[in-house]
Every structure is written in C-alpha cells, then in structure tokens.
Length: 101
Image (cartoon, rainbow, N blue to C red):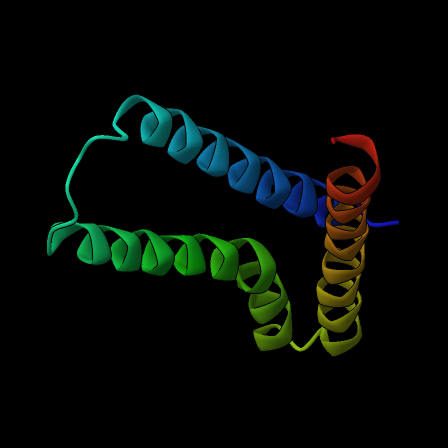
C-alpha cells in the first residue's frame, strides 16, 4: 500500500468529517435564521471549495507523476487513493446504518 494514498484518503475523510460536524454545530445553534439568497450562495461556494480540495488530494500528485512519464506509478497512486477512500465511505455508511440509531 502506498503511504501517500493512505494519507490522502485519511485527509479527505477527515476534511469531510470536520466540515459536516461544523455545519451541524452551526446549524443547530442558528436554527432560527430565515432563508435568504446568501444560503444557496454559501453552499455552492462550499461545494466548489470542497471539490477543489478533493481534486488536489486525489489528482495533484498523480498528474505530476504522469507529466514525469511515470504512468504506472500515477495510475497506481490514483487507484490506491480511490480504493482507500472507498473503504472509508463504506465504513461511514455502515456506521450510519448499523451503529448509530
């Protein structure tokens, strides 16, 4: 297993966990706020930021390896990162379905 792939997947899962936790905490503290035009703008901005962070974590180093002519290493790193992240996703779904009532 590639350590870089593991680190990237852990950082991605951690980022998602922290982000969702913060949104839940702020949402529960500010539940009396009326909907306005800035909420959809804020959510779309957060989505774009998250996509940029995930793209960096998943694709930056594989693209560099590809540019250097190390195609097999690039593919291996990308697929390893995706596979490890998929395991985190499966674990999150299992916890959501079976552990937390």
